[in-house]
Amino acid sequence: MNQTSQPGKFLAILSVLVGTFLLLSGLAASLSYLGTPFLLAGEDLLTPQLGQMAAMFLGLVGGGLALIHGIGSLTKRRSRTLRLPPAYFFWLAFAVALGLGSLLLNRQVSVEFLFPFLFALGAALPTIAVLAYAYRGLGFPLTWRQGSLAFVCGCTLSILLAILLEGVIPYGIYLLVDPLSYLASDSLGLFAPGGSGFVERLFLSPMLIFFLISTALQAPIPEEFAKALGPALFGRRIRNERQAFAIGLACGAGFAILENMLYEGLYAEWSGWSWGGITLLRAIGSALHPLCTAIIALALFRERGRQPGWFKRLGLAFLLSVGLHTLWNGGFDIFVFLTGLDYYGEEVVSFSIYGLYVEVLLVIFLLLLAAGLWWLLRRYVRRLGAGVVIKVVPEAISRRALAAWALACALVIIPLGATLGPAWIQIKAAFRLP
Image (cartoon, rainbow, N blue to C red; front, side, top):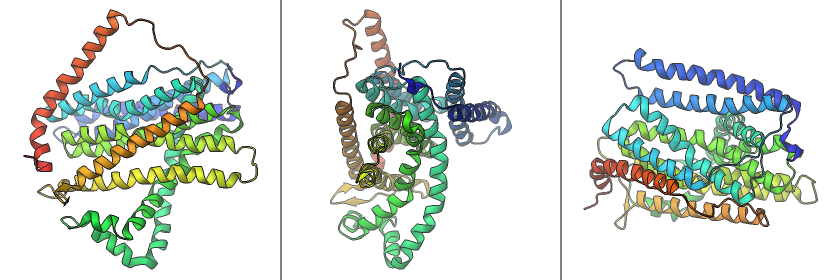
């Protein structure tokens, strides 16, 4: 076991304090979760219950991890290697949660109590699957203490810093955009509901550059800066590139899960089957946040010696992460805007170009971008994990394992089939399918 499993005393004390606070907050959220139905009897409980579930996840999971491993560090207890089950285990569990969650929403079966747990699983499992895949390929380079503290840093300190920066930066955007007020007014018209020529005006005009710059300033730049806080705090305790990349993945994963809860919670509130669609779409792109943070963490480790040109190389890594994040946010934000218009009007508003719907084009774009993110993650993992040999595949598959697999497949297929029954009519109406 390497010595990096023992963080400094300051970080250990900070971890205990933060963990205690989060754990108490999580317990308070749990009491509120159980008591809200009695306090708000007869009212819509889904929205407050989802918010409390997010607080419970952050407090009980994040706080518990921080407290346990902070105490372990103070008592000089050695931390075990962080080993996760194969990635397919998390994807299978995600499929079950997605099917059952959609079924509960559409059938209105104890939505306030049962659905929030499946909602939390839908937000967390795909991101954890990213960690499981990458860590296995990297040879499990972290201890539980390292991975837990990096994860908690991503869902606490990075989140707080990102909120602070995203609250200040819009004023800077205003100062930059004000001299180009005519471009700003044109951009507002670009997204006017019912407008024609959406794709032409976006991709065949200077508006594309304006849109991407404003998108990058609003979220990717402050978020990527904030997520890099975790790897920076580890500093010299990171001993090799595999550890640096893995710590970056964990920090990005903690951030991503809470962001997933935000977006997916909005769609769960709007309508049942839309939650399943947006959750599946974000699951496919679940490599985004972990990968972008890992790229910066790797650059921070490589440039720790401050060799000539280090600032430029570090800046290029940051720009790569921001660029990937901006491309995803650009397409995803437009998709959220268009598919959420029915929340504000009586009829579903659709944009079409040459007989194709913009929503479909945006989904295709996001799927292609997600494929590129997974390819890039695989490339990094293979390069950094070259020469690492781990025997993790059993020589034979037991009958019990096959039976469990068959049962799990049935649990996935039955809820999805039951869910798509009532939802298919809405899907056809939304996209005007025959």
